[in-house]
Length: 420
Image 1 (cartoon, rainbow, N blue to C red):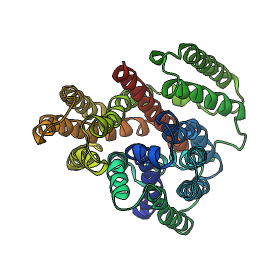
Image 2 (image 1 turned 180 degrees about the vertical axis):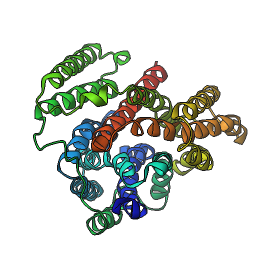
Image 3 (image 1 turned 60 degrees about the horizontal axis):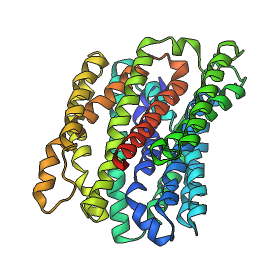
Image 4 (image 1 turned 45 degrees about the vertical axis):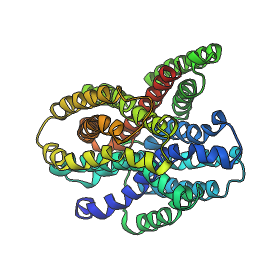
């Protein structure tokens, strides 16, 4: 009753950390040329400023969601946001690209601890009749954060320097920690016990790590086939070992009832493909606008703005429909619209001589935004709406991992195709 009565305050504080963790995935994309020049490094090294954050972030999601269910969700939110804020401060004062990569990994640790709580706290604080609306709202926050990241990064580079893309996190991080300690009650899964499945967490973390490194670094089309095969084999073997261990573990991290839930499995599979198409395409669009069309960072960022704007426009429809219609009925047409938008964008010209080139792909950007704005919330509702209250942290970690893996797969395929 307390959670439901104070849902907007608790949800608002959660959104501070949630938006920051997702914003920092996208905000660095637009700053790559600036970082390369200022830190006197090559493109292969500077991309690890992005990769280090994404890999550490994805590796921790499931295990941190489970530990938060066991030991306290407010505790893990405060720890995660504190680490994230400290990591942001360290990134802002980094004196070389190697230290910046290391400090981004620290940021990724903080994000990986707090991000699984986004969906979990939304399920807990909204009463059942409003839960779909809440899950739709958090998805819109994620969409806007991801799409506005390049815009904010471009503006900060234009008026200041790349250091400010990290400094801006500090006041919001401090505010989030203070408000969480003041407003949040502690919640946890009373049935989970206190026995930690260390072996399961290590096996899953290593499997995700090997898979992501294979995707982002060891591209088989770039001539590094032996390393790619080694990492993929390690990922498969570790994944099989994880599944075998979970079947006989005394207190498994992945509860059997969660994995046997058909709706939860389908929603996560949908999220994997959704992220591969949507997030991968947004990154490639940024690179096209910057490197081929010759846009300035702020121009490239503004060129992507129609995507989050269209997502915001359709949110009221999703919010109303999410509590009354089956998630699949909402997601299917939205994903079809997104696919048509991606097909439209695929015909973009290699160079741009005038504004007409951009106007040609604008309908595709609008369809992409509409599809993302409806499809992403619907998939969230489908996954989290199928989960019982005690497992919300774990389920949120699994769903976030599906999104991160999908994004990595999409980027890897697009870059391999684009590079070829």
